[in-house]
Image (tube, rainbow, N blue to C red; front, side):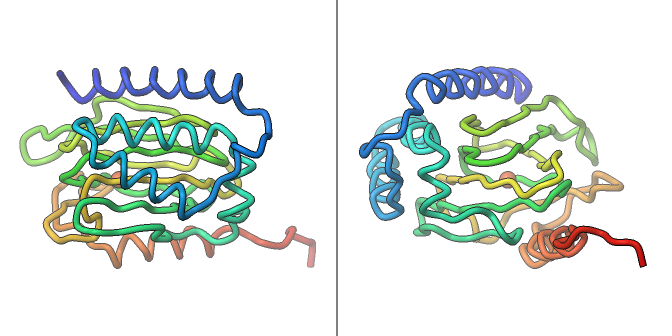
Length: 217
Ligand SMILES: [Fe+2]
């Protein structure tokens, strides 16, 4: 199965999640989002035989009520990567994308499942082609969508809207462990993943976003 096929399949999963969210998104006591309970549920799912599928189900349920997630994690205010949980076999991140931000292609060397609780996130998937990479597919994610990516995925991410996007990213391993790669956005050549560079991308993208309305001098 190619990355493109996986991407299309998962885009359909995302549509299913959107439908389920639309049908089941009524506010109720059971729709509360508690961070500790969510982390415990994800950790439990990560012990299942098909851990990624089980984690995706937990994530779909959580973001089916985006207002509850926002009430707990807060309305996105600053772009960055916030760790909700991390151990050697699992990482849960609250990723806040700056408006119109682009993160260059990178791998994970572990499965990843992404859920959007506010805004939009466009993913491009890539595959190796000689000494560079070539694009193979795309998935446009909206609020309540979930996208599952395989262990060997290479993807880049765009926030296509002029406001912050909030997403929960879950990885089947230690996201911060060494050994990952990124690909230069201009040359598409591989190099070691640089976490500092990635975090700088978030900071610089955030700084480009005007917080106050522009006024004439
Ligand atoms: Fe990623």
